[in-house]
Image (cartoon, rainbow, N blue to C red; front, top):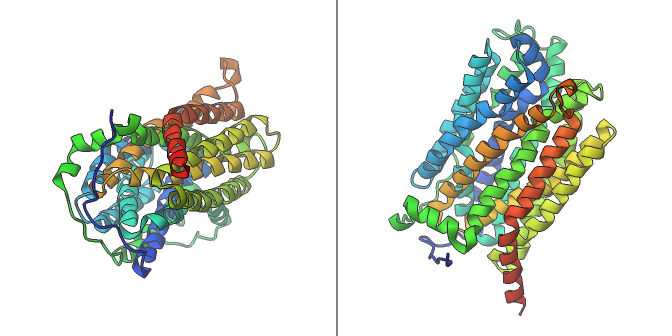
Length: 441
């Protein structure tokens, strides 16, 4: 299909003011809270399983599918709303919903009540990333978008780390009776207290969100139609659509590793929840922070020097790094080496996520930005969040039934995701190299 052209329907933003950076940091904290609430379940897998009488497969549904199904269903409508309505207010509504739902997880009495609460978490979180990404791009010029979106993405990285490290420390404090005197929750078992406590910070975010400015937007109805959105996604050999798919494919490995690494460290290497959560958090934080900042900064450098279409080239290096990390999961002989391998994976995967995020936003007009991000996250939910934890659980079934064991299963799933991602993204990378060659000639 021939490449289409479009003119922006509004002027490019000037270099960001204080209000723009304020928005970035508040949205960063919102993303941090959302990922904390999403992943806190991973450090209390065994207590939940024992208390509610669940199997590993049922736990994987709570980790993945319970969140992902409604997330996938709700995120496209959320993206469409964000492209035409007040993005700040939409985000605030989402924060309120997922915070209440996280608390409800801690009050669940069965698989189905917990599953329903996780569904509500997914519903609330579906409002955040499409609206926030579109809002940030509206507030920043192309020269700053990579670093601004990279800082925003740090919320996901640090949120996962908070869920594992701070969550582990909080769980340890709960077990020692530090919160036993709190009204209403003091008499609950530790994992229930943990879920309730981590659901509270979202309420503190609400007044901060309402101070974010909502930039004015000119709307072109021709760009906003669904048919034009998909036409743009399929231009240039489907370059934008391929970036959507590859982010989803890589998230199979992301979610498979994040969901089961704390459990692997506890079961096979004898670590406590605090030790396992802290070790994984350190590896994710080091790899993820480096990836978020460098991925955004390097992509901005490419855009300044060789044009915006050259950003996609750095995905090649990102996915090669992810492959190295996946191979490290196979060969690691200790918990510390596993953490290093996961840090290498995070470096490749998250830097690719940040660069790909900017490519998606710059590849479409502002009337399509939130919708495009929403489509990307829908695919991520259906492919990555839903499949990652469950594929690991299926491959790692008890050895007497022909299973592979938890560590080989995690290595297999992440390596498959990285190799498939590299295959999917290769045509757009070739276009990026052509753009580099053209600008250098």
